[in-house]
Image (tube, rainbow, N blue to C red; front, top):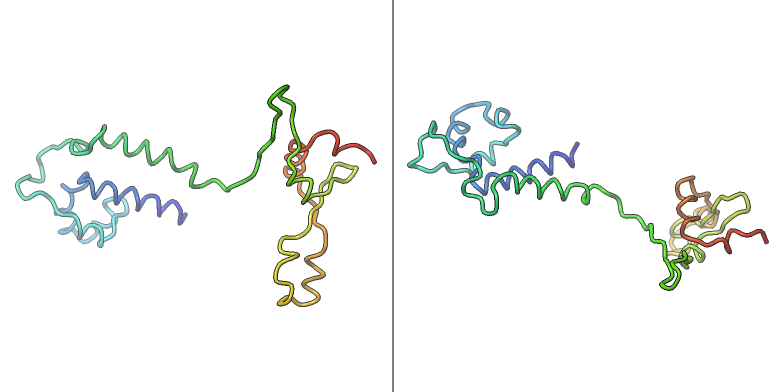
Length: 170
């Protein structure tokens, strides 16, 4: 919810700086509930908007006329195209391929950090088990040394990142 409000506030700031909502600013300053009426405008943003002195309130104006490069639609499309990249969590899903035959190669970081069991599960150490051990208690150090199972989606991804050599029976 907070992220959605932040994006809306950012979009609103773009509209206000471009003068799109400028003709409603005098009305918003006069009305007591104008902050709610203008789709979530706060009084602080309404107070900063100045309407043109010569333009009357009832004169129809194209909202994107003073925006370069296509008006509101271009602003909205650029903002909405950026949204998925902001909301996604970073993840490593790299699979290496050979240049000659296109075969999959093993990602070495997976081999160094994880261990594959014979039933297809992967185990790893807890994060931070080597870091700043001098300030951790003995019980916490013991808990950090324990192995943790990876979940199903992580196991499938780790299997994609390794070749059949690492899945063989020893």
